[in-house]
Amino acid sequence: MTYASESRSIPAVNPLLVVLPHEATDLPEVLQLALRGPEASAIELATSRTVVVRAEMLSPGEILICVPEPTQDLLDALQAWSGVPPCALCLVCGPMGREAHEKLAALGVHAWESIEALEAQSLDAVRGRARARWQREAALRTELESLRTRLDERKWIDRAKGLLMSARGIGEDEAFGLLRGAAMHANLRLGEVSRSVVEASRWAEAINRAGQLRMLSQRLVRVAAQALLGIDTRRARVQRTQSAERVQDNLDHLAALELEDAGARALTDARVAWHGLETALAVRLGPRTLADVDERADVLLSAAEALTDALEASGARRALRIVNICGRQRMRAQRLAKDALLASTMSGDASREQLSTTMDEFESALLELERAPLSSPEIRTALAAARDEWRQLVHGVREVDSAAGRAALVRSSDALVDTFDRLTASYEHSLQVIMS
Image (cartoon, rainbow, N blue to C red; front, side, top):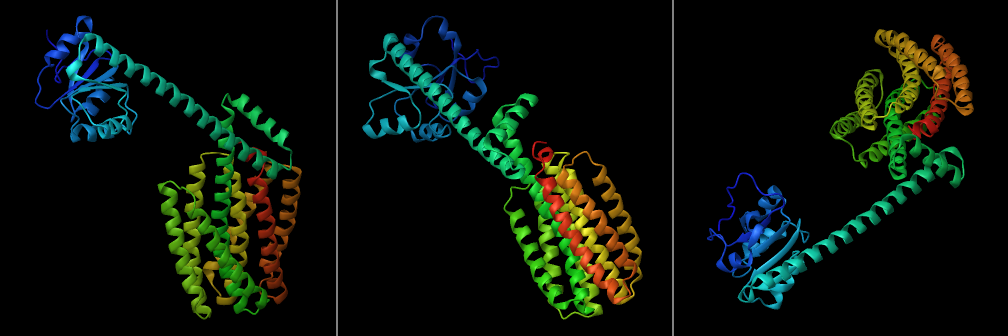
């Protein structure tokens, strides 16, 4: 009688994998007598050192370990399966103590028999016990996994319903109806749609917060210039403190997310840029130090732009683009006011040249938002208010050399930030973005 060796090139389908001591080259006589008939041609061999690899390669129907005693090598090998072997696992060996039985049970051995009493009938019995226990454990694991999946889905559904109820001001039944309708339309499980809703909301908030960093980088320079020019200095000091706190809060929030590599790198760059700007703001302000603050703010602006783009790509949803576009308008409003004040303070040609570019970008983005199909009465009202305030800001830029023009410039830029804060939140919580 011949048996398959470890070098066999074409393994049998779901063979019986027999584990022997390292020095063995063939089945022990007792197994040869017990394993007769057609089954003998479906035997593959392994040792305790190769059983895990062989099992992965061969996908056996059963594993039969036949050794004089369970060695530490064997126990270490079985540990790789963490108590859940890939198939029925039985052991034939010499007498064992209670402690050894407990270890083997914890490692997933389903049945064992004394090699001294082994014969064809007793081997069939021990293998039958192993298969029955394996099948029962597999059924229980499947049932447990199903329960866990349903529980996990229920958590996602509850979270998604809560988001819809909060964002849209609707009841629980209506929120559930939206989720169920979306699941039917997309031919997905309700849990999958609910998880998508929660993740879309999370990415929308992340993009909103990263976008705020762009605006805050420019606002900090603007309030510094405002203080230097003596324009409502008390309010400028308050805004500087609030803006710095808001930057740190947004960075901390984003750091708590599980970002992909590109997002994590961009966040690190933003943190470094913020540290540089924070350091520059601590220096006594004058025309020269204000220029340094502006340069460092632009570094933070670039880092925030990269971070926002990385988050939008991570979200992988086209609807999130509108959140990014709207959020960027806050930065442009502050940048316009900042560049106008710097041009007036330091007679900077670069700031004057940037004014025209930023104004064109603001107007173009505002038109895109006004024409976007993603809308609601609330959004349309806010866009109309933004258009009116934009006209006031342009007037303030043109009159920046007068005290009244500067005051109007500061007021309108802050009003636009507030308006686009509300607009960005409206887009973030819109049904189209959440259900994207």
